[in-house]
Each structure stands twice: as structure tokens, then as C-alpha cells.
Image (cartoon, rainbow, N blue to C red; front, side, top):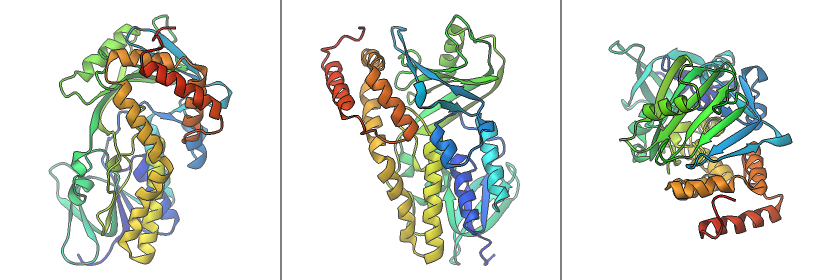
Length: 398
């Protein structure tokens, strides 16, 4: 094989890969989108209104609109954070949502293929050769492209093949169960509220969640502690919230990266995006919006690379993303490192969430996907209160 078959092969059809494939196809490039059959990532499924607008997502894909979040402390103290008038937390089912994105990419010109990535081969000719199998143990298929975009998740095979030290990115392992939702109950389940459980017994270094999906719900937990039983933790949450009897629709587990890679390209013809690039927000674990934004930046950088033939154009993907979101990721990383380190600190963290200033700025930042600077006095008040909590001058229970 010597001829280029596609301008770009995108490996991975989640939100990031499907977005990159669709954008590149709209730009007039020939694109192949390769995705594994039956792959669904464990995910709470939360999306902000900004995502719906920026990526032209129809409201019909929302399975629920959460109007509040409940933060649960180690003492079982619960702090409700109503969204108020500024928006909502949209909920999607990744099974349906991801497939819709892949179909949209195909509708605008990307060629979909189902298979598992094996490796990238090189033979001295132009481009990179993507090797994949349609079925486990089946024959290898080979396709040549000018550029490969790896959007194949944390522990990306594309990144491992082409980008040094990519396998060293820190991850938590996430596991969730999708259940058929019951009505609201007196044990704590509310189909209009997202629950986030900050308890060491639920997760020693992250958190557990119960997110409504309309007719279903996602109950999950994350932890980097390899000896911690994620399944056992989910079973405990289900029991305590009166959800143990609910039918389990499916379950999934996968690693979730906690820090963007220092390099997203190989300086030649490979670029990574989404979880493969490490763009899951620390502390919150939010990934869908950032994955799709990353996919769009990857597509723009790929477009320039294809026009100019200059590999340096690929660096724009990381540079642009980090300019927009790097500060938020840094602050969330510091928050996770400090506040999730012990139940005493988790208790204080949940206590802070009861503050109206914290709630207001938290929701504004979530909706707008940037740090809010419009209310300097609110920031000052939060700084003073945070300092009091850090120094132990303010009680965890008011």
C-alpha cells in the first residue's frame, strides 16, 4: 500500500473523536472514524447549557435537567446547591449521546468503521499506517492517512505508540452502574438532583455520585486506590439510598485521567485529543464539554497541518486549549489535592459549599466554563472564608 487513503484517521468515537471527525469533514477533508463496538465510558453524563449551544446539540438528547446538586459530607451532612435562574445541569446517556455524535460525523462526510486499534506502522512512505482489527483475533486491516488523531481514551494506544511518557499520566479508575430509576424516595433519591458523596468510605481519594438520567440513573465512584472496591462502594450507595432493588441496565469501568499531557503531538503526524490528551477536569471529573472542546481544537490544528504540511501546526491544539482552560484545571487540581485528602477536610469542603457566594460563583463558572471575575467582592469574601477554613478558624458545622 503506497497511496494516502484519508487525510485523517480518527481513532475513538467518543465525544472528542466524533467532534473532531465531524469538524474536519465539514472542512472538506477525507476522514475515517474508527471506533470499538459496544464501547461506553462510565460517566455521570452531565453537560452544561453552553455545550448544547456551542456544538448544536438538540434538546431531545437530554434525558433530564437537574436543578440542584447535593454535596454529602463524611458526617452525612447534606448541602443543597440550587442552580437558580442561571441555567440547569443537562444529563445525557452516553450510550445514545455518543452514537448520535458518531452518526452526525458520518452524515457530514466522515467514513465510519468499527474495529479495535492495534498500532501505527511506518514503511518510509508518506503518512502513517493505522492497523486495526474488526474482530478479536481476526485479520488485520491497514489504512494510510496523512494524520492520525488519537481520541481513544485514557491509556490511549495511539499516544502510547507515538508520544513519549504518555503512559505515565495519573488516573483514577471509575466504575458506575446504570439502573432503572425509581420515583423520589425518603432515603435520599431525587430524580431532579445530582448527588455527590464526599466520604472516605465511598472513595478514599475522589467521590461517589448519583446522577439522574430520566428513566435511568448513573451510580458511580472513582478512586486511584487499586485496592479499593469500586463495585462494593456502589453497592453500598445503592443500599443506603434505597436503590438496591432497582434493575441494573448495564455497568462500565474505565480509567479517567487527572492531568493534561505535556505533549499532544509527536511532531510529525499524530495528535491526541479528549481523555487521550488528559482533559478531564480535576476535582469535578467533568469531561464531556472539555473533550468536545478539545476535539474542536484538534480539528482546527489538523486543518492547518493539512493545508501547510507543517507539523508545528499541531501544537496549536494544546496551546489554545490550555490558554482557555489551563487556569481552571490548575485550580481544580489544587482543590482535589487538598480537600479530598481526609474526611476532616472533606467535611470542611462541604461546609464551604453551603455559602451563597460559593454557590453563585460555582454555578456561574460551570455554566460559562471559565473563572468568573464579574463580582470581585464575592471573590474576596470567598477568599477570606476559605482562609478561615484552611486555618481551622471556622467550624465545619455552622
